[in-house]
Amino acid sequence: MNGATHELFDSLAQVLLYCWVFGLLLLVFWTGVFLLARKVIVRLHGSMFGLSEHDLSVIHYCGIAFVKLCVILFFFFPWAAIQLLL
Image (cartoon, rainbow, N blue to C red):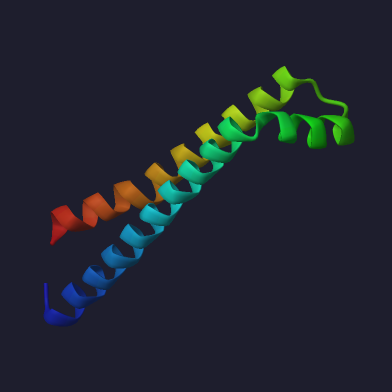
């Protein structure tokens, strides 16, 4: 591996690491807001879309799980693979 390729992979790994950290911060923020302001979310979105508290909880839980899966799959695993390569 020549110097330019090594530098490219190093830069890509750094970008993926930043994306992974920002994705985790998004998940922490989303979970925190949902846990702390559940009643406000239910009152606002439940009345707008006619959803029960249980329906909104399931939607948010599935959304959090989906974002978590995507962050791990698209940012953490490629970053780890590049680190192993370097």
